[in-house]
Length: 293
Image 1: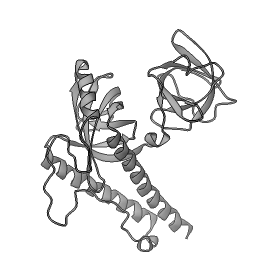
Image 2: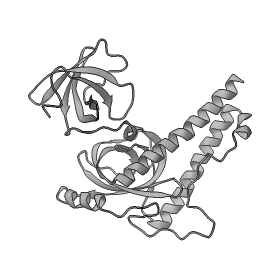
Image 3: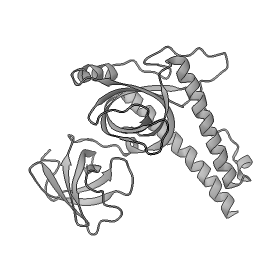
Image 4: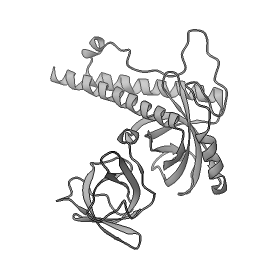
C-alpha cells in the first residue's frame, strides 16, 4: 500500500458511484493509516464530502491500479482518505454504470463461508445458456428468450416522431422488459424480484424489499436482458443499505462492491452496460435531431 501512495505521485479521484467528474490530485503524505491528497490547482466540479467512497487511481504507464477509499475530510484544497482495499487493476470499461430493471435474488453468506462461495463462483462452468440455480425454461421452436433490444427499429421510421413520443415509447418498452423478465424469473425460481438497479462491472446498487447490514456478504444471482438471456452470479460486500423514502411497500437501497465474480459474468455485465447505454444514447440522439428539425 505504501508504494501505491508514494508522496508526489499524481492520482485521479473518482466517486465509487461514478457521479460527477474525476479530479486530479497529488499524494501529499500519509499518517496513521490516512492519506492526504492535494488537489492539482483548484478542484473543478463537486468535491466528494466526508463519508463518500472514492477510487484513487494511479497510472503506471502500462496499467492502472485503484484503491477504494473513504473520505475522512475534504475542502477546496485537499482530501484526506482512509484506504479500504488493496490496489487492484483498474479497467475503465468495468465502471460504466447504467440504470435498468433486472430480476435479482440474493442470500446472506456467513463470513466463515466467504472463501467457499468465492471458490464456487470462480470455478463455475460458464456459457451463454448456463443458469446457476435452475434449469433453463423450455423454449418453443423459433422463439427467443424473454429479452428484447431496440436496435431493430428502422431509423427512418423513428426520425419523424416527436421527442415526447420517443420518451413514452422508451418507457413502455421498459415496462414490457420488466414484465417479460418477471415472468421468466417466476417460471425459473419463483424467488427473484425485478429490482431497479444501477450496475457496472465493478459493483451494484439495487432496491429490494429486504434490509441487510453494512458489511454483510451477499451471494447474488441476476438475469440480464441480452440475447440470449444471461444469468450471472457474484459475491457482494454491502457498503451501505438505506430506506428509500416514500416507497410503499417499503424498499431499501443496497449498494455493494463485487468481492468475487467470474470473468465471463463480468464481461457480460460490461456488455449489458454498453448495450443499455447505446439504447439510451440512440433515443436521446433521435430526440435532439427532431428538436433541431
